[in-house]
Image (cartoon, rainbow, N blue to C red; front, top):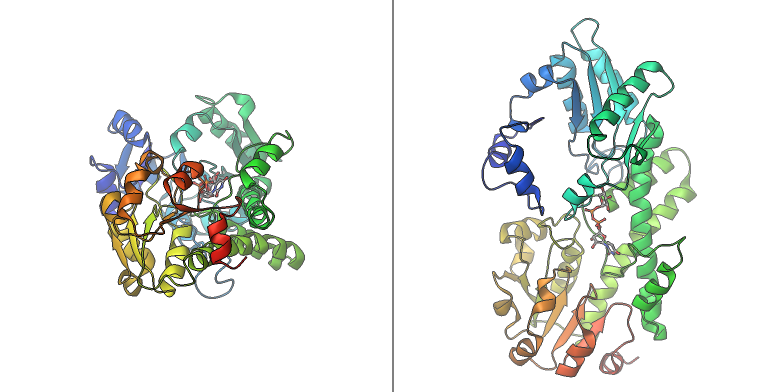
Length: 438
Ligand code: UDX
């Protein structure tokens, strides 16, 4: 297996002791295999020539300009990878779409490959093998996946043989009954649909969390109760300040855009509303912080614990913390940020220079929390649960507020200490009710 990238710095990092991404268990895998059957290189041409099978795993971000901007997938990197593969291939290849791509991308890619390959008689078989692993649990998801999906032109012999070749690769560690084959378009659409449905579950429970706060119901009890229905199931029902990550929003927008292109405006609007609910949840959280703190957070130090879009990753793409921080800064807050994995440069890139005038990043939670008026929990890092909250209470301004955007802390214990606690979708603290005039 040779991993190639045009970026020398990235490849150097993959060949060093400091891998360019943080993912539990990844270091061990790379160290065990590197130099034996796993290689990292910038020599794309040699790797392409030598390969029988090429997994294309390039970025497919949302288009920033032009037709479909803000919604459609930008396939620039995919197309340029395909052009290089075509230019350098001298033998038959199986091309595997690993990147998340719009339905029928394979068709477009096949055209690019066929029309640009100078070597005679070279045949490309295109397969779609969408990646379902989630960050933070990537290695477990890889070693014991719920399913592996392989799409190909199963209507003809060549396509069936190409599918079978990739099935054999996975069958080395995945039970065969978990390896599904489908036609190309079904496989491509399954990836977008899976992410859209997962995100829709979170938006649905987040919508209910708002209603819980109005009625005195507890969203955790509601999640638990509905999750016992085997048709619904217990996973992915945690109310939160909003979903983030590189996939959910991008894939829903892309799915909705494809629907629009096919004239299915109602279907597109249905999926847009999932993103709309996610934005509402972030705005609602900021509104709650401001109104609870007597309608002003100007010049108040607000400790923000967590910036990553979820625990066990340093990834901040589309993290709800960005919008919440921006919202609080707009109201004049001074943010004291601590995240165990996200470096200051990353926060700077996400927030911009202007916002950084109102954000201080700390290397430890103690300094972030000292003299703070409030704490906001943005990421469900386990370590936040282990803090001595009594000690924290002592060093904060009073009344000391905790706004738990992930519902991970022991709220009864915090209230006992003296904190005014806001937990998403939970009965509202009487202090908050009176502060908000509710
Ligand atoms: C997701 C898909 O799960 C994965 O299958 C796909 O391959 C890539 O996109 P990922 O973005 O890594 O994976 O994270 P995921 O665990 O799905 O969480 C996404 C967001 O939803 C996070 O911000 C998380 O905190 C949030 N979330 C998740 C909730 O708010 N509540 C939940 O119950 C679950």
